[in-house]
Image (cartoon, rainbow, N blue to C red):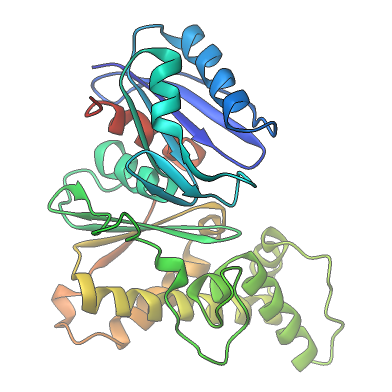
Length: 299
């Protein structure tokens, strides 16, 4: 069953057509409308017509999504309890599924990417924020009210930095973009160096590769926090696999090696039963691919 997927980002909406056997047939992007829900629905309808006028549609969006309703989204300021699913179904006259973008990322990797054939998977998408998706028994798990999977807002350090959600010491505040840059400045200052306020995570990675001691120590610290988060999730969910994606995952083993060490050192499980930690495979296409997969079950 060929379907369409849309991934609504803060700047662009990614769109693609996915074949029934999981092959990408076509993909592109267009700017995210800032003129409100109806304008964005109109843009999605136009793109859907170009990609295939009779195909079911899946839409991925950051934020709290419940039964097709965007309760709130950081990428869509002013959207509160917007029934995106209903609006799209009325506009396009075909089945529509709406889901959280981190759930879509995890579904995509389970169906078409690095977690194929694995029944119990926890996905983390690490970038500016930290999104999470939970697949149990091969099915996405969203909890009683649709809020499950907000793994970035698990509190690990009560005295830690303030998070975008308003709490302190959330995983997101510790290992997202702001956490990486803050830690790098702290590592430089501890070595008598200037903080370097204009640095980006990619710069911290490249400097680590060149032997910058502050950068190397930063990734060790960030990876350790990630691993402690994974240990906590292990004790709650006991998954087969942790899948790490998002822009920050481009740091590869700089991030994942210390995360694995912290995970193995802080779980109650026998060594042979500690979940694997694996990098995601689908890159920036994962969101719309997961949405397209979800569209297969849309009514």
